[in-house]
Image 1 (cartoon, rainbow over the protein chains, first blue to last red):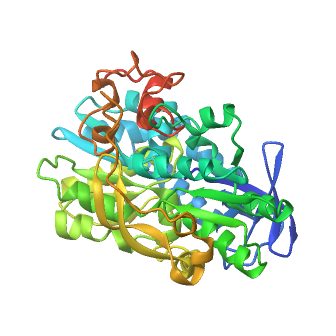
Image 2: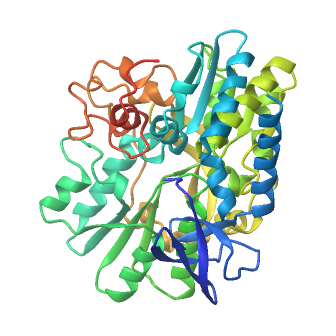
Length: 73
Length: 365
């Protein structure tokens, strides 16, 4: 139910976007998020709505921190 | 995004697992609140990477499972009210048993019952078929309620009078409070739901460390996310510095998603709600406000809340939801109760604990 899948935006028209992931394309609405959306963004999609934009910078930071700890093992 | 693959990196996962083994200094119990976490933990074999003295137990975060028997029966009842009433639901509800029937069985008997992925599909059906009344079963937590609220606002804006919602939406923090207030509490820390928190942020969980001294980490759903969250919980336990931390930073912001919450509370108000396994939890449910009452199925069909009917005989779904027993400790598990012939909702839902344990053969710790 609370499954949210990060999908890449391939088209934006008004409050609707087309998203792609693993060869599958779906439509979703962006009425629930404030951030401006552009093609190439990753959105977390749930029940036909984007509920948040995925922050790539934060993703990279988390991984970099873990990799640094890996180096110190 | 290439970065997202890193959260499935086996080398990273195994290095976190090694550190976890060093950090478990006594028997530890951690509850994963969300059913999607339960599924991920089973699917990725996370338990095999953990020391035996660390137990993961499932919580109440499965919307289909916690929906009360009374709500399910009331909703099925709406479908029998008239021939032009169409029930529309998320797929997971279809097979939940209710007094000898289920939505699936009712559909087999000829009732018009439809499955959708988004409430907007139900709204569009109502617009296309104005001669029928469409009643959407609103289940789900804070993740889902904004989407359903938006569909109701759209119905009002577009004047679609034949669309209604039966709201059984629930809030996660009050259920955690109910678990923490229980006298037999034995949980040391919580893996908190990532996508509920996308909406509500981290503040509403403050009572977990502050009033109950338990560790709490908001987690993502990939193997590295879950392992990292477990390590963060252990660090909190070992240092004595309990707080609500966010591991799932790429999606969850401390203040959540303000716009989604505004839409949710434009349509819904908070009230007492009945949960399977818990009974009534104060201020834990979302109900349609008076200003949107034209779209409230419980008003349109004049439903009044009655006592919940008894649980299916022998079913321990309620105890599983409260983290009191593990699925395989139920007498019916894997015998009378299997995914193809479920006795209770914990074996029905794709994120029910019993279904997860059965599918991925988690028979014992």
